[in-house]
Image (cartoon, rainbow, N blue to C red; front, side, top):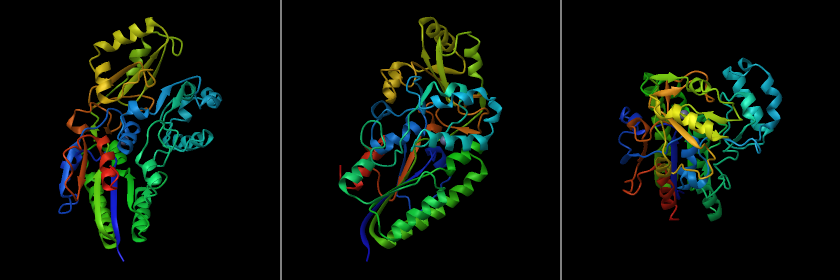
Amino acid sequence: MKKKKLSLFLFIDAFGWEVKQRHPDFLKGLIVDSKPLETILGYSSACDPSIISGLTPSEHKLWSSYFYDPQNSPFKWTKPLGLLPNFIFNRGRVRGRMSRWVKKQCKFSGYFQLYAVPFKELLLFNYAEQKRIWEPGGLPRGESIFDRLSREGISYYAHNSDFSDEQRLESLRAHIEQQRIDFAYCSLGKLDGLMHAKGNDHPDIGNLMQWYDDQFRQLIAAAEQHYEEVSWYIFTDHGMHNVTDSYDLMSDIQSLELKWNSDYCAFYDSTMARFWFKNENARSKIFQCLENHPLGRILTEDELKQQGIFFEDGQYGELIFLMNSGTQIAPSFMGVKPCAGMHGFDPDDPDSKASISSNKPIPKTITKIQHIHSLMLQELDLS
Ligand SMILES: [Zn+2]
C-alpha cells in the first residue's frame, strides 16, 4: 500500500542558475518550474545554515569557518605542531588525514577542514561549525528545520556527511522503498568538487549532470511507486565562477611591517580577507592599503547589514575585504594554489546566483536561498 505524502529536498552543492542553464536536458520533462535565487555572500558555511533555518548569518551566527578568538581557541593543544615545517602538512592527503584527526581531538561533529591554515596560527582561531547542523540543536542560535521535524515527531532522512554522493542516494532510496520517511533533505557534493578542480564549463560536468539526472529519475520513480503524492525540489546555495587570476594579498599586508597578533590578525579565505585590529595604527595602515586596492574592495557596514552578515562584535572580522570576481587569493589559509573554479565572490554576479527547480510551481515569495526554509514548512503543513 502506498504511503500518503513524501517531500524531497535535494541539494546539489554549487548547482547555480548559470550552471543549470548550461545543462538544459537535466530532468527535462520532469521540472515544472525553476528560478534563480539570491545567495548570501560567503561560503556553504554561511548559506547552508540559512537554508535550513530561514535566518541570516547575523541571526544564526554561522558565517565563515574560522574566526579570531585566541582565549577560547579549541586548537591550543596544537601548539607543538607549529614548530614543524609547513611543507609536511601542505600535501593534500596529509592535510585530509590531519583534518580528521584534529576534528576527533576537538570533538567536533560538524563539517571540519583544516584547509591550509598554518599550524602556528591555528591556535589564534576558533571554529564556527563545531556541531553537525543536519540534526536538532545544530545551530548556535535559532532553530533549523531539523529541530522542527523532531519536535513534530515527523520521520525524516538527512544525509550523512561522511558518505559519498552514491551512498547518500542509495541510503535515501532504501528509506523511500521502506516507506520510513515523510521528508528528506539530501545534500550532494560532487558537482562543487568537480567545478573547483576543472572550472564551471568543463565537458566532465555534462557527464556528471547526466549521472545526477539518471539518479534523480530513479529516485523520483521509486518515490512515486511508494507514495501517493511526491513533491521534490532540487536546489543549491550558490553558483561557481571560473578563476581567471590569483593574487598574493598576504604579501601586500606583510609589506606594511605590522606585527602579527600584536598589531593585527587576519584570516585569508579564498575570496575574502578578514582583519582584527589591536591598535588604531594597524587599523588605519591596513585600511589605507585596501581602500583603493585595484583587485578588490572593503565591504561597507551597509552592505554587510543588507547581506545579513554584519556582526556587531566583529566576530568574523572588523574589516572585510572582498576580491574582484574571478581573482582568488593565493596563497590563502584555504589553499596554497588557486583552483579552476571558486565561489564566494560578489553575490550579485550571474555566476553567484543559486537555483531551485521543482515538479510544482514555486511560489513568487521564494527569491532568496533562506526562503527554502519556508517552502519546507509549507510542504509539511507547518507554516
Ligand atoms: Zn565549494
